[in-house]
Length: 288
Image 1 (cartoon, rainbow, N blue to C red):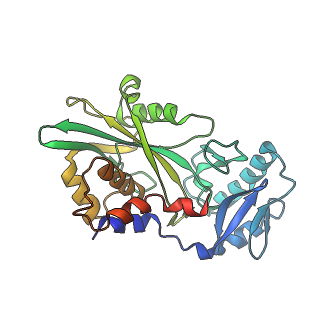
Image 2: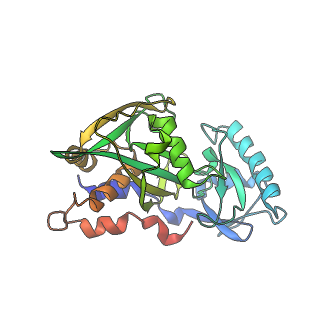
């Protein structure tokens, strides 16, 4: 196996099987051809044509679009087509930071191929024998990717909250990292991908942060989403990422980004180095 396999897993979607979804004058998502009939059940909300899907022109502002979309999606959830309804609203926008066109239930983003954003934090410790990373083991009863390995802290981006405020919140909830320590996190980049999962398309963009932690600090799970934290030498983390699929698909990409930036991957010894650098943002090629 190779690091490039991890990026291939992130970007596994066959986009020829998706139709673009437009709403309020912008392309906002991608709908799989197998789901077109589901949307056709709601002609007051969706207009399904041969080449594209449009939200109704009557949904002319944020409130009307959000309300109509929510009604249709709740019915689809009741019929079993959307799992694990979370009650969390995400913003639908042409790009991050743009004015939201409407809001959407987090669990429904993949069905409509709507881009969501999030933050991922790699917490690390410097020791005499090199870098060590705090790796989260996801709760075994978590509805998504139970028991898989994860970055130290990660979370989706709720509507109406800044990235760094979300980071501080997630650090406290997931790892008992206090706000003063969390605010030492440094923004270091982003990864973007188009991942096809059981619930639909995830054309997501994750903002990345590094957080150097004190040698005596031990993260503690606080919200039930993390089973345990493990402090693992970076060299061993690299082997796990390269040789197994124990990490959640996007967390492996986030770690490859870390390995490159910290000089742990070397173009003299890693034959796929340039392809890895390019592959971390494949999802930007087709827009949202």
